[in-house]
Length: 474
Image (cartoon, rainbow, N blue to C red):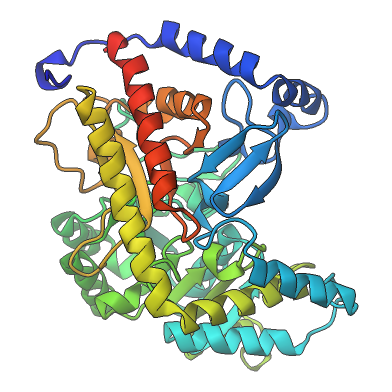
């Protein structure tokens, strides 16, 4: 068997293959195509979340349960995107939907504009499971990280923020720098991703390299006395699903302590994913602040900022509301809090059963995808694996390195087009898998406990078929 890698680093042209895939997909899903055309008359690009609007059009879903969804054309699709990786128990788990249904029946669940007991109960669980002292809820991870920035800047009296290139911390002014890799840009990630943001904001954002301790130390020497915070995902999400090394996170904690900088862990992706709490605990590191969302919300829109009492108190009356973290109309929404309380309670009570199964399925999914492409003669590697501190992972991202000796330890190695074929993994494979009734957004996804061994067999067959379609174009 001849594997396609190494010396075959020629310029690849997938235009004909992409055209064929799009034509076949359009023929297969006429109702979704029609709905997309009509949606574009009223919605920009036909939807309200750019990542979901795959080309030439996304499947329009009518139901979702467990590991599968059904689209308007009647296709049952094996889903590994799982609500932006929020649904570790699968779509619409019964114990949550039943609890919400009962609440609605008794006249509770929609917005009331009052506080209620659920806020206390849900906050108590979150503090207990994460070691945080105080919590305030909001509606999205983007808002949670924004408020965490406000808190760190107020507490320290400093303005600069440091983040790792490739880290996604939400669509807000301080989050839209250093997200996508730009091969023609100095530093790769030292790039602002949106117009409309004042340079006065983006000039105060320092980009470091994930898992690079030497760079981190050098940048703290240069900027440390001006840094309000260092924000880090302990398990990098959109930057490639890469766990932080123990030494790297320890350096983050040591340097922030030394320079009086706040350490923020963005755990919107990693919180409650590896155990029933924060990932930082598995490293033995408690940040000053942490942000949570996704899994915590049980399928409903909920996020939180949690951390030290002396920092969080800046939003309160006793400190004259120095930080304007007042929330919004739907902050701490009753139905969201009920789903979150139900989910976090279930995960804490079933921790010994849920997380080993997720780890096993995640390992099998990654090995399944790698072996399927390798058996067809195409070299493929997955990220999403755990490490010494993270015993197992439910997450998977598929990559096609040009060489078999590459080390995918940071986003730069993954998204550098001279190292990995990102067009193949993000565009071609996405659409080709969808034609096989498998959904994995941009080669990016996760298993849930609702996935089965039979589902992974289905995934294997799909990957084999996709590889056969791709190989003639390499």
